Image 1 (cartoon, rainbow, N blue to C red):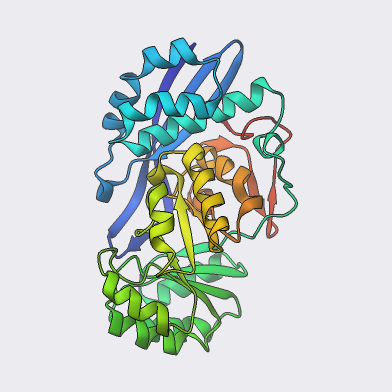
Image 2: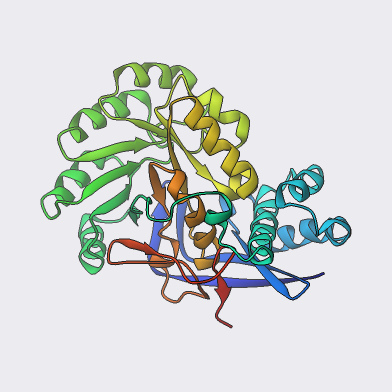
Amino acid sequence: MEIEYKSFDLELKNTFTISHGSRDFQPTLIVKITDSGYTGYGEAAATVYYGVTIEKMIASIRSVEPILKENIHLLPEEIWELTFPHLKDNPFAQCALDMAIHDLHGKRNHKPLYELWGLDPEDIPLTNYTIGIDSVENMLRKMQEFPWPLYKIKLGTNEDVKIIQELRKHSDAVFRVDANAAWNVEQALENIEAFKDLNVEFIEQPLHPEDIQGMEVLYKKSRLPLIADESCIIESDVEKCKPYFHGVNVKLTKCAGVTPGKRMIYKARELGMKVMVGCMTESTIGISAIAQLAPLLDYVDMDGPMLLKNDIADGVKIYDEKVHFPDRNGTGAQLLN
């Protein structure tokens, strides 16, 4: 078994701003695992506000290389259980590793992951296209540059209602609103009341995760569905979110990979909650893994490569308002260089 690490600075088409900050580049780590003639690829974006760096991820995965070499023949879920005790403080690293091992597993078994899981790739929700916080003029320009029937609009300003009202004048697309925990309960109620007649589908993470009391009030009064993101990080959070949210957004990097991500999806389904999987502006490597799970979802946010100036990989592609799977096994992804 051989393992390689490749880092890239993914250049974005536009400066991307959310309530946590702005960026023009997204650093990302690609993990490449080769064994018995097959190669699996995994990815995790290095995200500053989670304290994640390329160097920390590589160091973490290197610490479990002996475990990998001894157990690479096991199922991905078994390898995850063996490595997680050593990587639990770095879930992004665990995600990149788990994704690569799943890809390798699919290639060894000569099937795409969705087929190994018994899923139908024809039954996939459309991804949204994300518009970051900006001036209304710039937000409109981005929408005009990329016409799409479903936008996720990042908010968290003092002009949020005005922004949606202005954007609505120029588009009939469905809007999803993501506040990234920037509102208080009074702002949320006021904004939602205005949004309910503006073709807004749902509100993602309106309040800070620690504002449980506010979420109790909001859940009872909200006229729109509420989807947890920052409130739903790890597996145990799904059940905790049930009393306060209508659904959860699972992020593979934050929960530590495909293995726990799939379990979270099934748990949410068991609880009667809506399910979404979101991305962290990964390349096609990461998005191709998310796409394998898409038949299980109500909503999906896998627009990472659509936001990039230049992708670094080939695999699952999204165009003509459809998801197109390559004729390859595993996740179907491969590096271009």
